[in-house]
Length: 315
Image 1 (cartoon, one colour):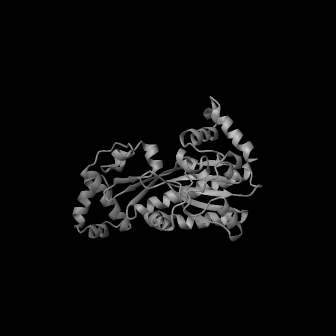
Image 2 (tube, rainbow, N blue to C red):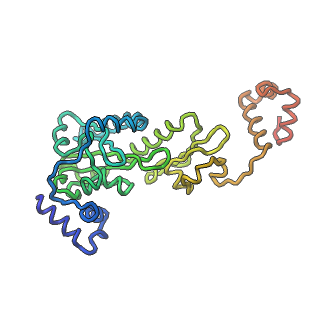
Image 3 (cartoon, helix red, strand yellow):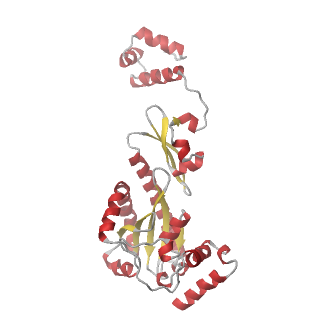
């Protein structure tokens, strides 16, 4: 089977139009031609040392604190079916893994262990590496892998982006079960995408703790569009989905801009608008009682009424 698989991979690679056949074929061509890998390779898998792994986990401490409960929840959903839940950094190094005791040996033999490097450059076409290379969700079923030694695994992956919209990690569910076919893969892939979006949302909110978070939209393809706004309504952060939706780059966010400007509402800041906002907030906090609202603002009742009249508010 290994020889037949390798021959099939190399036939695609040698074909003049091989890379255009499918995304999998394009990845096979990258693996052989760009990364110079052999589908029959049997050299030891790449794995970083224990000390380097500890340092890498510490470097990603905030992200891992957000990721851990999501990994646990996802594992509760898929673990009993023989799946492992795996989290890698942006270079494909596995930082965290969830697997039942009875499946430890199978995933260990497959090389899906903490510290293992599963970039496309290291292992060829695979769930983690190809997801990171393409920066989009992927499903890599058994014989869609490049290396013959990986054809016993099925992988469902989704990328994770940091609070600044940069690719930061990959979330993976892998199975060594023969009975996990394409239909099961699609179901699990949907769970993986949902979990990845949750990690991105939670990571963004944790990073911008203390800021007001503005929700714009939630999309299965791009994720949740969120903006972080300071006390003066200036945008200080945008999730990847918000950046894509609003056409925001790092340069656009280098200097804080007013929320309405970022949203394209075009309203010009004014003292009148600011006064109106303060007066309405005071009235809301005072339950509509003007005298109490005036006391909350530390001004006289008559002054409060004059300011209300000036901005067009009725008592």
